[in-house]
Image (cartoon, rainbow, N blue to C red; front, side, top):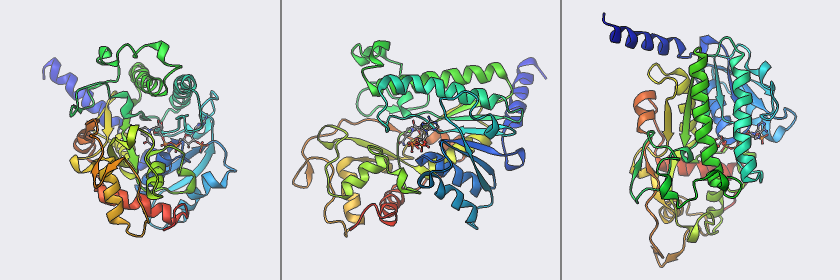
Length: 374
Ligand SMILES: NC(=O)c1ccc[n+]([C@@H]2O[C@H](COP(=O)([O-])OP(=O)(O)OC[C@H]3O[C@@H](n4cnc5c(N)ncnc54)[C@H](OP(=O)(O)O)[C@@H]3O)[C@@H](O)[C@H]2O)c1
């Protein structure tokens, strides 16, 4: 066997030895009370894992009861135990992570709680560093899966451009008209968020490489929608919350005239991708996976999403969305971001929900939680 072949074999054996399964010990989830984190807990339990769900405060029933109730679900083979931790406190996750084979780091100060752009940026590094330090103390750790964002991928490109995992938000700096600078961090939440996620990813891959005993990987979701597990998942300005507003007949306010290309992914698929990344025998340190539509059917302009909701839920008096001129959109929408979760499907074996099921389940969950009435 030549040297190159030996190196490939060594790398392959290393990847195999880091693939996680339920027999390797518990798996921890940060931000477990959150929308994505809660579904990660569910998905892990469905696959037979013992889950350490990390929340800020165990005594908040509105954020924790839906998690502990999972222990009573006979369809779930695993179990869940609550642990407390704060992303801003060093060492806060030491207990929760001890003996864990993997950490899924979904928790973040995402700005829903009115953090300033600078706080979002600084928070991301401080948080990720603290979580990583606690994780690295577990001698059982094999995989660290970070919830990054498509924001760490997208950058100015002509309409119709298809983004892949090879794209980074800092590419093509000239396309930002001078706005891709550190001075923009305190002024622009979107730039602060994108820069923070991209730099946090790079920092994680470098530290995991240096450590050698675990892989760091990232999941890069786009517009996450799908069923809410509790009322607290209806965070103001989240995509699911915008859908609720539309279902109430209100205009979509996150972009001019409500015009946007929604590149949708089901929250349950995002959760599965986190687990599959921990389990993969193909992906390795530095692997990143976009979680977006699987194909064109999941990419909808606001008016198309609006029309789908209208047809699916005739009991809704009115469905709001973008500015219309009769039954046609008043103005064309900029054709971006186009991107598909093909790598997650190919390398991780992810199977995705059809868009109709995702949209239906989102609105159904709002009805079930009493947050929407016909
Ligand atoms: N949703 C999307 O469309 C989307 C798209 C791309 C990327 N992402 C990324 O996905 C991750 C999860 O987002 P999400 O939509 O699930 O948001 P979410 O529902 O707001 O969940 C955020 C979680 O982080 C926790 N958290 C916030 N500050 C904390 C602190 N100081 N210490 C400990 N925990 C703290 C929250 O706990 P509390 O319940 O105590 O507040 C909550 O559990 C984030 O990293 C976000 O950037 C989301």
